[in-house]
Length: 408
Image 1 (cartoon, helix red, strand yellow):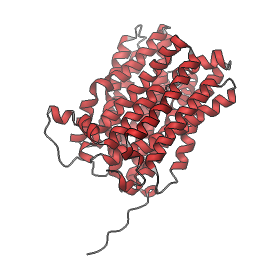
Image 2 (cartoon, rainbow, N blue to C red):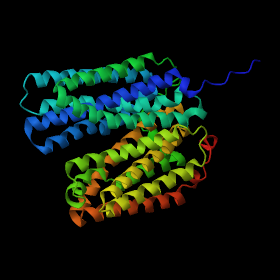
Image 3 (tube, rainbow, N blue to C red):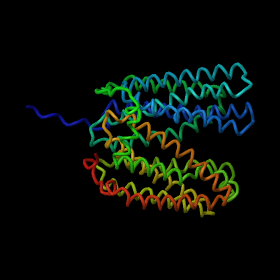
Image 4 (spheres, rainbow, N blue to C red):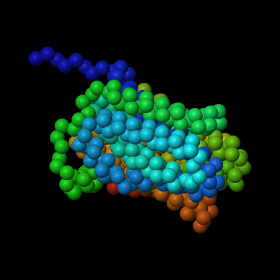
């Protein structure tokens, strides 16, 4: 029997780069659209509450539909889900263009359209998360996560910047840019020729719908990785309070605020590029816990800093540590989950991440109102470190993971 040829290197994997192009274009489109809609809605109403409603309209569908999104990703061709969602995004942009050109006088139709946008994001994100492990051999997966996450971080930096630039230069023309981004994303998904169908479909029942929760609860590696992320982001929320630090503590104004908001992305992208060069990662479990301790310590340093450059360094380290944590957690969760369950587990994981981000900012703001901004952020950082140390004790199976072949 002839020996199988070794797999092609990741950098020559056509399907993987189409996937990266799809995710990156979609992320740029989503973030530039969010900036554009926020700008136009604020010009329309002048009410900051409406900006909060924009975020809620995009997040609420994910919270309501994540179980259906997970079932869809485990029952249908995940590539087709990605294509359909990008087509829906294009329809959303076309509807917004029509509303703005008609001289709309109220925000509610915009929010209704954004609910559709949020629903499509929920299905898209779940399907795309579940697709990645199908595009390369197991040993290439950590490097693929590093490349894909780095590209996504770059898109999260570029999307808002491009949105702002295009609004300033071309006004409503920004929406045509987002249309092009979603079109590119849809075309890239269409060109992926890997077999992304789930071979064995479980019958739809309450048990299968809730299967993601059941699997996470019974798999200690996945449970530990998902829960530590939820708690770390919940207690480590700092981004929502950056305007307070810029105005009242560091006294750097809106320009300084913009730089501060960019620094976590800069740190994430820098460490992500380093991670792409690691072919066979080792000490994965200890690395996860170490990165979360560094994450908590960076928050603590930032909370106590009264020097602008030190605050920027702390935010860059915060972003870099978060990138390492995401890299390890995504690798652990995706590899430890069977392909037939990956959609439902990805859906639960995605909604926990999004919920913890929203709740993290709420937690920080609530505590800041009660005990002050600096103590609120400091408590969050210290609690993140304490929770991480506790999880080291509670989940020894994660602590002992060294190589990929020990996951499962």
